[in-house]
Length: 71
Image 1 (tube, helix red, strand yellow):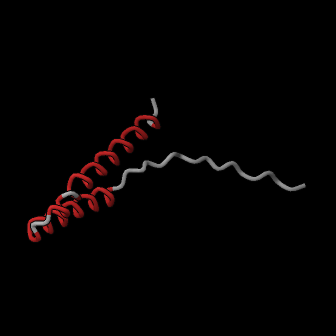
Image 2 (cartoon, rainbow, N blue to C red):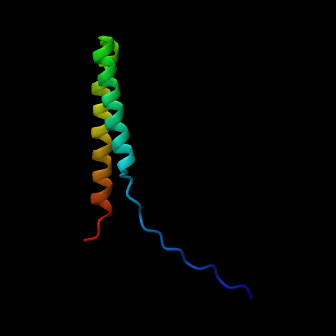
Image 3 (cartoon, helix red, strand yellow):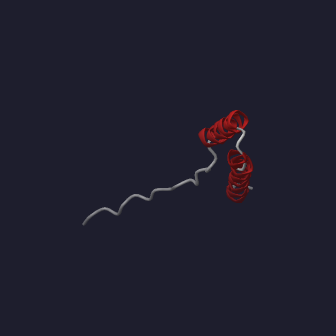
């Protein structure tokens, strides 16, 4: 008879990553620099878009953290 497969217990991982946060900050700073140097209105539109995506990312990570935390 074959042995039953061992049970693997998985812990939920947090989606938060400092690399992602730094990528957002660096991306925002690069776009800010490009907007100042190029004086282009089109490039300036990316600043609020990157900031909005960053806020959404932090919000989702916070909600998942609060949902998965042990009481």
